[in-house]
Amino acid sequence: MKSKLFILLCCSYLIAFVINLIPSIKHPDSTMTIIHLFASTLLVIALSAFIKMTSFQNVVVKNTLFIGFISGLMVYTVNFLTSLTEIAMIDILAAIQYPFYLIFVTPFFGMNYLVGLSYDAFSLLLSAVYLFAFVFVMDIHKKAILKE
Image (tube, rainbow, N blue to C red; front, side, top):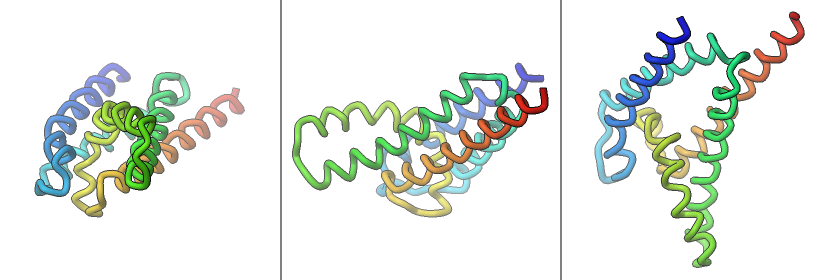
């Protein structure tokens, strides 16, 4: 059952990534459609099912959620700092943020169809979602340990 959920998660991630890639890069110049929302919703459902089935046993899930939280926070912070100053170190961080943005924010960017935020504000919102999921996983892990 876990391998089927993992395959579903990987397929839904790839679908959401491919469909949401261009709108997330060209935002706000591109238009979001219901297809983008549908792809992101499919990913959220698959991720939720995978977390529920394997979360307290899988360290990779916990680390991925934590890195997703950090990456969303980093995208927001770096964009905020680049708008304030022109320091070379912040430009280096801005170059580092793009892979994290592509990996952790782009597949969920179809959800921005509902809220219409800028990409940095959406990254901050998604960071809160990753944090909520991480806390949920840790709570499940704690309850599983207490049951034993």
